[in-house]
Length: 345
Image (cartoon, rainbow, N blue to C red; front, side, top):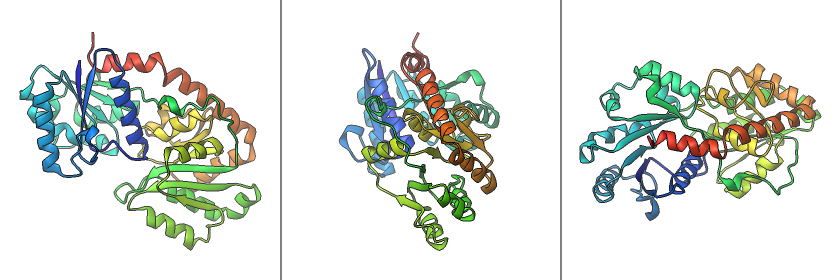
């Protein structure tokens, strides 16, 4: 089998780039399978990168299609379904599109004409699957759930896990995505700084993006630099260390398609706080592996406080999350899922 994986970006420290790198690794590990990758924003030769040049990206895609003659084409972003206009080059190939991000929850008129060319959609959560089907009039049986998983080197088998009494948020912060909830978390801490200090907790934010300066200014203007730290350009090694030592992964994002950072946190047996009514519900079981909250300052603080007051419960939630990840997002389950997604009989 020959699989062409087309992406907007593969390199990077965000959850989605890490998910794509791991998915490509899973595809390459299949027997009798060859994988080629074309990427818009990457420049590395291994990815046939176009260095953010859209014209070069298009010609690279066509050139690789003609040379490689793929049996399966996997589009790593809904915007890339426009490439389905080139399906005539190899009409027998299966075409797939991965569904993630808030943009797939809405009707996209400019993309509708390309949807019939897609053999299957791979949704990263039940919520994303239902929203995409409803808003774009796509049959549910044409949308399959992709079982996300973390790479094997994210299994902390020999690491000593600790709790250093801090909450951890990991996210990209863009002005176009004002739903991540980190600003609300900062506001919650500002309103309750004295109590949080008395309980001995801090807050660490790992982020990048054009909305990051606003969050930095919030911390400065609220005089919270002694309790909140913001980090950028964090390596995977450094990020793993933060997951190893944090008390809880928190991202009260109302627009989360899945919440890959929660899956990473569960690998390190950490409790999680995410939002209700979004893809995070696939991972977080309320009051079992963490808390699902309303995207409101008061509710965010309420559940942060519950974990600070009861470290034993926080640890139990982390253990439950680890078990959930082991059972539902690893091993044979993911291998069987890839086989199903690729239309392999």
